[in-house]
Length: 87
Image 1 (spheres, rainbow, N blue to C red):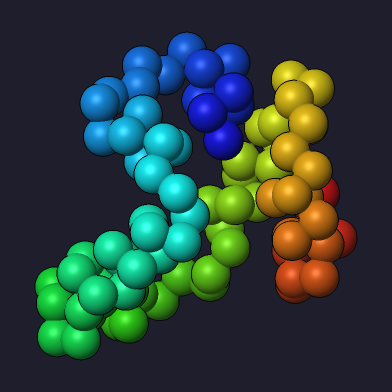
Image 2 (spheres, one colour; image 1 turned 45 degrees about the vertical axis):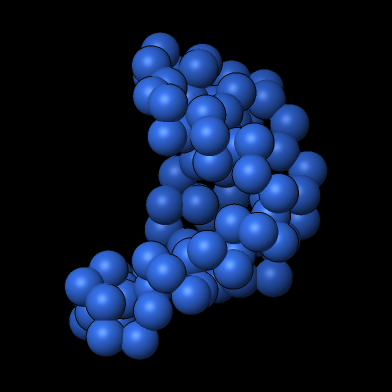
């Protein structure tokens, strides 16, 4: 997603850059055990959010296609969702 953000003129902060450098396995553990731990405020926001999962990913994939940035893994993961017909 970083190339898409850069193409849109977004300025990446230190946290965004740090999150791209942390190995996915460690990042997943961090999110599951710390940030989205049972009873945490971020988890409650996610649990009670009324929007459909995947909307933000759809927007990133659409934007990437507009500016011809390949996102093979994200696109492949997205192909089997309810939004697949929209890309």
